[in-house]
Every structure is written in structure tokens, then in C-alpha cells.
Image (cartoon, rainbow, N blue to C red; front, top):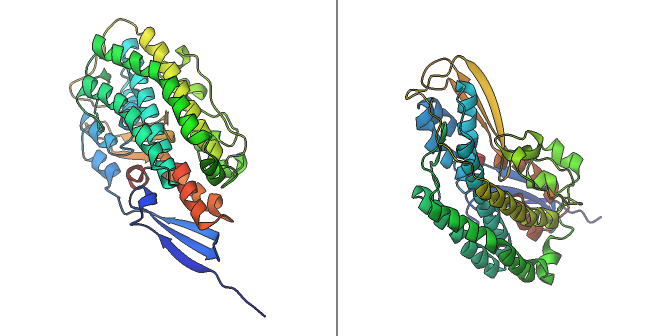
Length: 366
């Protein structure tokens, strides 16, 4: 009797498609994946413990280094958690500016996703196009806060600087360009037969499977569940804006790609409404203490990060430094979906599955 045995193949940590230092241990039956085990920790920096050894204000720059592609969103989530703990109220203008920055950063992150997905599947031109358009957002960030990747712009109580008229015009010009470059991506990738065959129907997930893995964000919405904290919680000033929640049908790699493509248009819609309706007033709350000492207590504050639910759990002991901080990192949690997404697929499909989850290893390992 012929008998076959499974064997193990390691992808990474030195592998171009793992987007950083990740090892995926593949158990294979021929070229079919029986099990995919992500092995993490190569980039662990102990950020939670570092935050516990810093004051609340000193901790903000460390959040830039979590998901370093979405630093504005990280600043936003941490600042909201500290404000809730300390009872600090921001101004309407500050909240509008925060939303503008967060949604521009969401577009920036999704552009990297589309570009790297295309590159992982062999279409390097897709990455060049996406990085070309991403540069426009980085130019805006550079003008607003003097940085292009780690910003420390959103502060406890508001933002560091007001939006200048020049920055507002750059933002409007970028939003105007979004429909054109999305149409270009559709011609280049969405209608490309090879690209479609690589991701349509591969690594499908049901809503129940995604929820069992605690997945959130575009990965969950691709399964058909319209769960978005900007709508569910209506935090900050998101209730002021009209936008839709794109969802998929089959939860496969194709749906994950299409949801993020559609989310770029929705984020641009939010930015347009926010910049046109930007209220007058201060960009920083007046009653922000120079030394922040929240009362004893705890808080869990969550926001819709670019990759899902980003949560900050903070315990205060009444001193200038947090007693305990834990960060719910969507990239880390979403990695639980890699194994069910890869089972039964070919080795080459694991690259598309990993890329469509869109994890950032700095956030996975923290």
C-alpha cells in the first residue's frame, strides 16, 4: 500500500512576502497546506512595559511604532483612552482634524496593502502606482507636522498644530484625485485576469469563522458583516458624516481586496465632509493639565484602526504613569485567521492569504 506523509516547510523569517520578520510553519501534503502556524516574536520590543515606565504624555510617541503604517490612528486611539481616563474634553475643531488625519492615514495604509498584495503576486507595477499616490498623503502629513511616517501629531487634548490654509487645499486636491487613481487601479488590477485568478475563490472565510478567530476590520467585513466601530460606537465626530460600510460576500482574498478598495473611496468621502465643515475654534483643549494624573481607575477605549479594532486598556493608580497598559492590536488578533485561511490551499496561495490579512509585524509583536 502506498502511504504519504506530511512534511514541514518554513516560510520566513527571511522571506520577501512576509512583510517583515514572521515565520510561517507550513505542514504540507504534497503542495496542499494541511496546517499553517505563524511563529511570531522576532520584532518584540516590549512597548506595553515601556509605556508603563513613561508618563502619559511621554507614551504617545511609542504608539507611532506599533502599526507604523497607521501612526495617526494609533495616536488617536491612545489619546482618546487617556482623555477618557483623565476626564479631558477636546474641542470640535480638534476632533474634526483628528478624523481628517485618521482617514488620510487609512487611505495611506490601504494603498500600501493594494501595492504589496500586487507585488506579492508578481505585479510590481501595482506597488509603484500605489506608492506614487501615497506620496501625496505623506506630503500633506509633512506639511502638517513635519514627519512622513511616525507623526506624534495627535496629542492628549487635541492636536499639535492647526491646519493651515495650504494644508487644507492640499487635502482637497488629494481627495479630488481619488476617483481617478481608483479607476486606474481597476484597469490595472481589478480587471487583470491573472490577478483575479490568483485571489478570487482562494482562502474563503465565513462570518462565523472570522468571529471565532476574533477578526475585525476589513477582514471581518469581507465576510459580509457590516461591523465598523465608526458606526457602531460613533466615537469622536463620526456621527456627523455620511459614509457607507463596504462588505464582501465570500470572505475570500478577492473580497478582502475589494473591501479595502471601496474603503478608500469612503474615507475620501469623510475627509471631504470634514474639511468642508471644519468648525472654527481652538485645536487644543484649554484645560489640559501640564502634569496629567488621572484618578485611580481603569478604562478600555476602542477605535476603528486601519486593520480592525484597536483598543487601549489602561489602569491608573493615581500617579503620573500608568500602572498597567494592554493594547488590543488588530494585526496580532487577525493573524489567528491565517491557519483556517490556508488549509486546503496550495503553497502559493498562502502568500496571497497572508498578504490579504495585511498584518504589520511591529503591531503583531508590539
